[in-house]
Image (cartoon, rainbow over the protein chains, first blue to last red):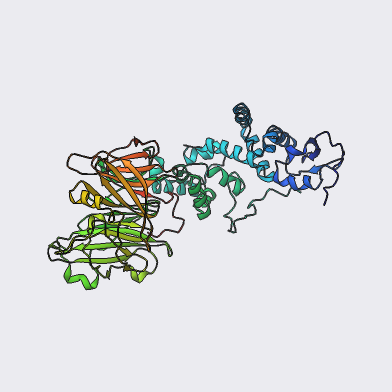
Length: 174
Length: 387
């Protein structure tokens, strides 16, 4: 079965799709970039998101979506090469530099990105943000972690559990 | 299209998802993705962050995924400089965990399991769960039928811990060498089941093999205990003849001819004491280590098929021999890339041998008193706490 015609019908230019954030901002982006999202990929393959339609993303605000798409646009060419086996060391170094810079962000933005990457199932972005949070946690005590991640102060009951745990896992604190 | 952020995201692993994270409200899959990247020691510490982090890192699926991502190996070590602790160390020599050890004289047995066994030659034996630190002290008293046949005031024992693959049951094998057994005495064999059926939680009498085994050669591979045997009066037995006890079926198997019996030159060297034989376990196989001179090498023969007695020489490594013909490098572990971890017994040091490049690298750590391999996760046992 032939794939449905996709909106503009212009075979020369890259196919574009429109994504609509929760605050109703429209983002036009290459289908190849948006398809890094497993969630969007099927809809796009079915011809969705083209023309005036647009795909609504009611749980991603425009600031977060713009950040997510920045990632997707940068990574789409390498992903199209099947993980870029032919990529030069320079290309890989450039992507790595981009990634490092990309997650050098405010914690609330990082949190929104985790949620968006999870919801849109963008594998590369999921690992990138997970690695960032893991690096923030590594080597810290439970209280430091709670503070770093902005968790509320433990209740007396939780504090007692934490103290008991420190006794049980004393070796892990050495 | 996009749905609400799930509190408990749909699981494709067919398991009930633990309660959603109360702090931070991250989806559990996203939280797992973050925590999987951290080393076990960090995870044990951050189990205290909140209840949901505790339950995520205690989930058997998480523990399995974490083990796959951080493949180790880890070693259980008792150091000569600190016999009051058991250490879990990695190959960079980093101490990951330290557990108090009540007896300075117990030695870590050579095992490659999720549990460890500590024993003396005078009938003391404990099984340790390195993940929890739990210890099971095994009773000293013999099996009922052996009560009057064992001298408990001056015992000489051999212990081995093995795991029966088919049932995931751990069993400890004990042998009493009766005083004077070299001339007339008899070796007595017993078994103790660690987990599973509770009425087996006592020493049970096992049959003795036809041969007298050399206790110091005993090694466990894939749930079977193997030994070389002694010559008996008027009956010379090939030096590589092997007897074995199946821990699952709880019976002795038929004798097995080793890899050098068919080689007259090798046998001649052995008789002239210019060669030695030892048993080891590598990659789940029984291995005969054949040390010989000119050239001075250690050949490692893997038993790939018991029924047909097929031995394959997978490694031949140049070694240094000490002046009194003591070959004292024991093969301990094979890394994923084929490199061998060797244990130099006289100085208690681990070496990593690259057989392709013929290079040796010393692992930077204190001198070892005894060492074993820990295959489990410090987060807990995937098969539950058996000790």
